[in-house]
Length: 213
View 1 (spheres, rainbow, N blue to C red):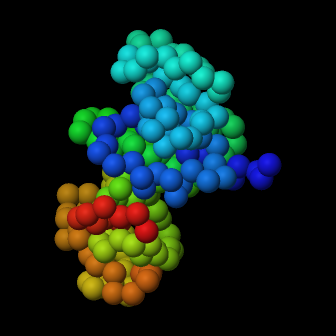
View 2: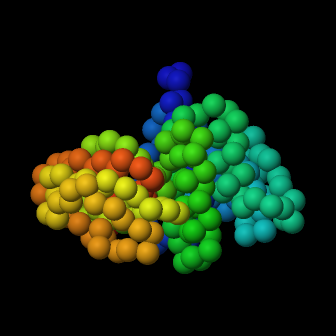
């Protein structure tokens, strides 16, 4: 069996279409957060591990490992899954199904992405319309089927932000967390270069319609 090089966490946020998940699960260690296991069932995927307090879904009867949590706890089910993935030594984590109708849950998952970044682990939060990550320093961002990208200063001032190869380029600018002029930029080729000298950026690739490319 090929080594599983990344961890995919399937969360339980309501989603009308989950076909986009299929391109992320190959060669991955799959952890389902609580009712996220129902999405794997719909896709015919057997997870490696299911973790949850099962307040939103009945505890499943399956052959994979299950960790049952107490409902009264400090971490969300998804964040517990993230910490478990870090304990297992994965240096790349993808959270699927973590962007939904509950804004508080979505924001918690954004904080999970930042938590991984601070521990030098690559983490992305993904649904059919968006890919969200935290970056700093020099980066080449690939289009990968998305039309728009937005960058926001995260939790503090970003200094020396440069964007090259986009519809709206930027040179050595300082950006505050309260500023929004870096939203909804567009790719003009397959990639753009983004560099920030100090601080960290919330990067969001997005489309207005479903993207399965």
